[in-house]
Image (cartoon, rainbow, N blue to C red):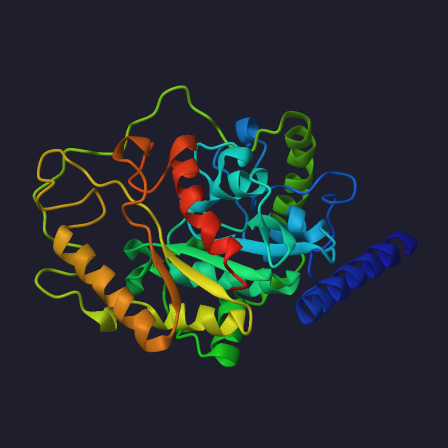
Length: 364
């Protein structure tokens, strides 16, 4: 009888804990070894081969930012804080942290407004303006003095917005952005990860809890080695010879339909930044000189679509008084790696040389 009472009490306590977990939804990722026992990571956690990269992809924004160096960086009076947002080209696919745009800008020891510039890499793989807005909304709590938002046409199609797993698994955060800043989000979008009451319980979130715990464990090996992604000795180079295909997603020539592009996400990002200056940068891309390069610039873009996009961005920036810089051709064609937007270290140097005067002129 005594044993039965113990079992019943234990079961009751377990049920109560799960009910409280559903009601309170505690931020399980806020407790972190990073920036305390472990140094903060120089980029947000992302990885597809955890055993070799000492990194992993997870969808808990609290845990992601808790692991980043910006979360442990007390802003000093002489710091001019810059955050970078964008896709895998900003995050730095195939690049070591010091080779990325953020790393190279930091090593340049530049100043702005009479202060020392410190750049934080909040880029994240997957291409989606809505994903960028989601991360920007979290990044603003760290009081940046300037936001550099690197993007490209591939981030604009409406079907790309929730396709990013990070977006699909953060529906509640997106709906809050919709309510506060007017971000257009369809709450019934089938791309969103569905979540029922069971999924919100302690048992239902055991995978998320395990991911947060694994991130701490991988941090030990990362701190010891500095490795946060796999660096293959050989990889497929970005495509130069292209198909004679005029289509871009669902768009066909001659018109790039603005209503099917997520311009609202761009507008929302500007609102999220508030009084903080934000510079939108059309990021560099590979301009092919191979087969069918008269039809397509690269794997991503037929010429007609990309040319209209550039004209549209210039027009929108003038109409909305956005600070916009078009660096689409700023990097030599031979300084791309496995994608039409991923740069070599030298390519990042060429980009940093273009970005530096934008940062130093932020107060002028």
